[in-house]
Image (cartoon, rainbow, N blue to C red; front, side, top):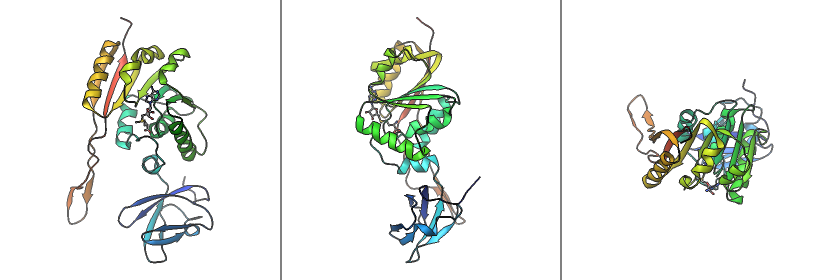
Amino acid sequence: MSAPFEPGERVLLVDDKGRRFLVRLQRGSIFHFHGGAVPHDLILDSDEGIVVHSTTGGSLLCLRPRMADFVLKMPRGAQVIYPKDVGAILVEADIAPGLRVLEAGTGSGALTLALCRSTGPDGRVVSYELREDFHRTAGTNLEMFFGKLPAWLELRLGDVREVAETGERFDRAILDMPEPWGILAEIRGALYAGGILCTYLPTTNQVQEAVLAMQGAGFIDVQTFEVLLRSWHVTARSVRPDHRMVAHTGFVSVARKGPPT
Ligand SMILES: C[S@@+](CC[C@H](N)C(=O)[O-])C[C@H]1O[C@@H](n2cnc3c(N)ncnc32)[C@H](O)[C@@H]1O
């Protein structure tokens, strides 16, 4: 159920050219953009979908941000996984409510957000990050998105291979880090039988090294794909693909933990 915009929450502002801005609403504040100035008070207490006008005639559509809007606008340390790839990872790695998910590296927390939403409070997400600055940025982003850190999430500062020392077991392991092939024994040990491993890598040589290593480390049913998403321009006069697209981002590989060899 929708409620009027309140102080402290984030609003997505879309101008008449489709440019998008993420703004935290505060009484008495003013949002400045190339189209002029808009007092936050014009938006506060209004319902989603309202269009407000600036002092110089620019207009802004006011919406609550979707997770994908938030991820593309939130502060970044590491490069985030694009929403098109996040969607595919959630489906192909079969992330579901109640599952225990291991993640590395946390980076900016984009995938962590989606993992937390999909596992829900009955699940558990443990996410490792090597770099303290990224670990902190991700924590801030997650708090910003959820209002507070989800109780079922644990952000750990350190190398994901340390999970082997904890004795914990997971249903899924999602690795967005440059050299996953070096830690497959630890990841395999941390997965339940039949558990799913998913890697996300930007280059073909990394994918080849990772997939060969997965096969050698007792992972089975290994599949690799990429997602090409092309947006379209649709008007009464013409329907055509947009001129620009985010073409290559990364390759997703998904595998199952095989039986002991
Ligand atoms: C591309 S970023 C991850 C981005 C993240 N998936 C997101 O959507 O925001 C890769 C991260 O992996 C971290 N990393 C690399 N090796 C790691 C390891 N062995 N354990 C934990 N984190 C690691 C890096 O510091 C970096 O922040």
